[in-house]
Amino acid sequence: MHLSIIGAAGMVGSQITAEALTRGHQVDAYTRSGRTTALTPTQPLALTDTDAVAQVVDASDATVITVGGRDDYVAVVAAHERLIAARPTGRVLVVGGAGALPVGEGRLLDSPDFPAEYLPEAKAFARVYDAYAASEGLAWTMIAPSPEIALGVRTGHYVDGGNGIAGGFVSSQDFAVAAVDELEKPVHQGERFSVASADETAARS
Image 1 (cartoon, rainbow, N blue to C red):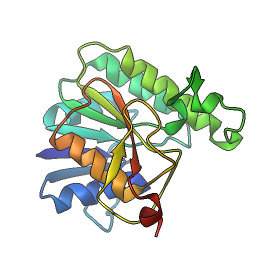
Image 2: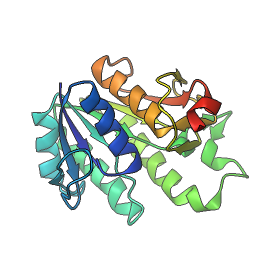
Image 3: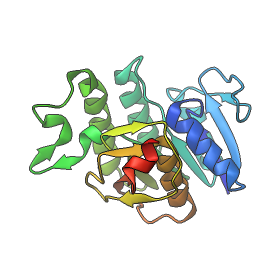
């Protein structure tokens, strides 16, 4: 497959890039700066450049968007909204956040013990998810991590939690396995799903 990964230098993006390359896919990697990473050269691309992003999406078999936006969450939300409005025809896999996942009658981010420092990001990606969920004519999927995601071990085994919290922890490597599995054999088209490492202890080691 011809895959494009926007945000390929980040913790999640770099692992998805590595997983895709290991499986023999053609990968076009994009970062804001276009700097060369340890895995592959990248091309410069800002998520806020809607026309350029839409062209990348349409030229690829599937595109992964994994841009955290910690510098400006408002800009990231707006960029996704503009991309949705542009209605590219290619497949898009968006990396979302755990905070917007449903818990009981609310969302994880609405829990009283949700860490305050993560609220801006959680609220932003809740808006991003709502925008995709309300879209029409767009080939999208959102993949959300467990409440805790970090570099760990690629166990190769994960739990698919559907549109709910799959578990407490996922290594970024197992998250990448789930992402590339979805790219290869899509089963969550037009919806969000979450993943956790099946053996969280092993994945942390």
